[in-house]
Length: 194
Image 1 (tube, rainbow, N blue to C red):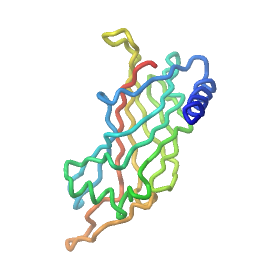
Image 2 (image 1 turned 180 degrees about the horizontal axis):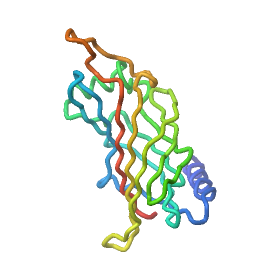
Image 3 (image 1 turned 135 degrees about the vertical axis):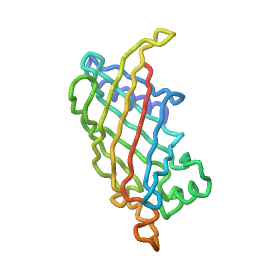
């Protein structure tokens, strides 16, 4: 029964897209969902999420993203430091026990021509949803070795983590704070024609 409902929802999503739209599947082996934040006010700590799923529709003629949704599992966070990753999963930050998933849903794409534009969407972290705007760069489509079309999408933007309830910090004796408030988002997706 649940499978039928999910198939119906997926079918409605595809039917609601323009005829020129093509569904693409994200190739995780060639994609990256990451972030960076200042540490000790002097350098950046970088991290990524390895476990996520997404839906993507692309208009090849206009070279525009028509739909993009994604869910990211907090458990998959990796900053190359296990102790820090555990802290980020805790109630001080993402509170994985209560909020195991971050989500993004595109609301519109503003084309600037030549495969560039602004991707507007709603980002949800810890149950708090806020609008965000990400700079988008699209490359392709090109055919891979097997003849399937592939596209590349790079997304970049910044958020203030405090707006999403990520408020933990420590003051430094020398002034400033341990963790920067501005988070840089960097997403690189390679997607295959579905």
